[in-house]
Image (tube, rainbow, N blue to C red; front, side, top):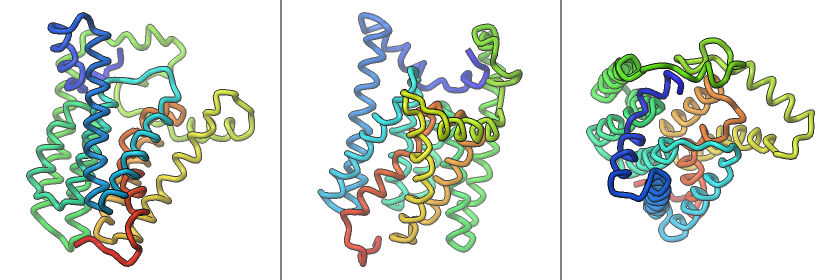
Length: 277
């Protein structure tokens, strides 16, 4: 119902294809979400195992599903949110396993037709290239993917939009919201102040310490494992984008940062003097 959603085609198209063999759309959605959560759990286990063996795998798995459950604070959840979880867990795993650039480009390509937030995979290539003392191949690949991703997003939005019904459904929505990037930082600051000063039985205020804790986890991961500095930096940049252009109280938008929490949880099972090979 919003223009910005038109480029997020991976989840809806795959889900629609399942409706041809399932009893109905609801059954296809439930089956898909269960499958994606299972896959996400398996990727989290592999991630934790690479960091700290079996104890790390269990802690990463727990952190992943606990954080996902915590973020189900609002009554809506889109199919691309589940894919985001799997894609960014795979991205974090690829970083830990030091996969070649081509793997990240492939993951970026799949992620871009799911959710434009996959641009941060391309951004990581650039940040990692800079951290590694100017790896020009990664820097050039990053620039190409960012430009190509932005072009792809705009082409899909223009080509697939029939009518933007969001403004009709939500008459009180600010003009321009849902069409492209919408600056929400000051709105989120206001919401934060309201949540801290006015009691709400929905306890949405719990989102505030969750968001505030992400940079702390990123700093700790960087301190424990300097080899993952570029990853920590990109997750902080990702969080900054979410707070600047997303709604603070729409908790589902923070699902892509869950892999950082899984990584941090796994690191707690590894001796402090051990470093990545």
